[in-house]
Image 1 (cartoon, rainbow, N blue to C red):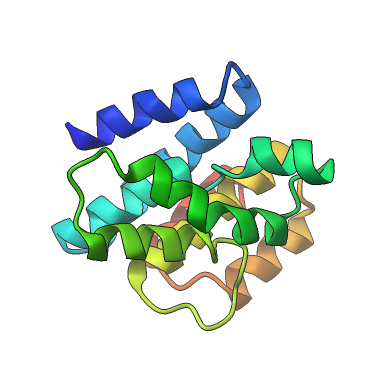
Image 2 (image 1 turned 60 degrees about the vertical axis):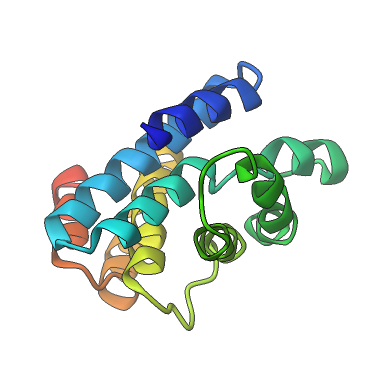
Length: 162
């Protein structure tokens, strides 16, 4: 139930920006699917799904403040915004800390610490690559260098006919 409530609030937060809404729904779908196929623990899956929904929460602010949604700017601004956004939900301090960490690192591909982080990176990449028409060589490079989950690799291969 909490996932649906957060989803509803995030849709409203997006103020009708269909691209943003479609993107986070796509990332959430990939993250949920990969996490379930990888068999991660319930609590980790829950934080992963929430992080996937709110991972780009800083985009509206970044557009206004910087004129773009550069990934590093999203990471810089997003961690605090998500803390405030999630404060009304029944989440523990540890859950909010982890979700905030994930949002604050979702464009950082080094020192990935945890399956939730790995899966969020993979899910966001699959969505971004399909939305932005990444080249086949970029997709293959990401798969070989960054992806770690078997299900993420299979999904990427299926989406891009690799």
